[in-house]
Length: 299
Image (cartoon, rainbow, N blue to C red; front, top):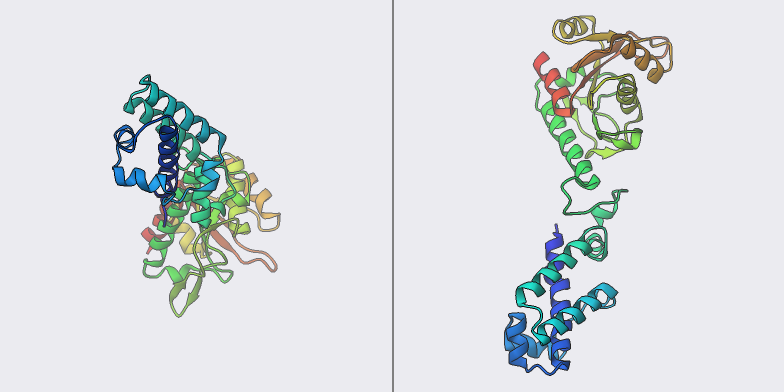
């Protein structure tokens, strides 16, 4: 794991300090004066002067960095800029370069997992799409942990397998829904998990959730279970319970049923099967952990 702050410390700051030291030396500063201006040791200035500190070419060649070095160097040399003012100018540029820019690119190179998310992100933005996607994945993991730690859950897994999923707040398609790749299956009374949650890996369960949302439901989490009349009856004692037709295309049938009821969450959807179609139950809730908790409360 590598943080973007490490990129700043290990690559940006040494490069910029080296460039500033060179700029100030060219303006007639002694090594001691450079050290005082930059708040570093004379030995560090000496290393910069002799090229003993490696510069990052991508940072050196960035026009904004070069302009900053010239502005700060001129300001420090003329006395028009204090060390604090110089620090502020450098900090401002760092934040700019962190937001989907040079430093973000270097961070992705150091952490390839970051580039796997097909979203534009600013790593320090608390409202960034990247952070939101990671929060949903974490939520699915919590829901999954609740289910797999619940004694008896494996007995509720349907023949087609179970899944737990959660969508982004503004989900438009399956790629905006995080779930377990493949399905949870019952292996000797234990729910076996095939892999870590991902986006776009559970088309069927995701389509049910998205269809319910398109019809007015606020649910973002979902778990599917084996159909049993007694199970549906028990759920109906506490939660809105809506049947949809197994004869229609699933998304259309779910949307029609939910639209007719406009139920709150948690919400239970079910169909009793048809030729070649296994009957099944879906528990929808505000998020994946909430849906999983409904299941846990049954057992």
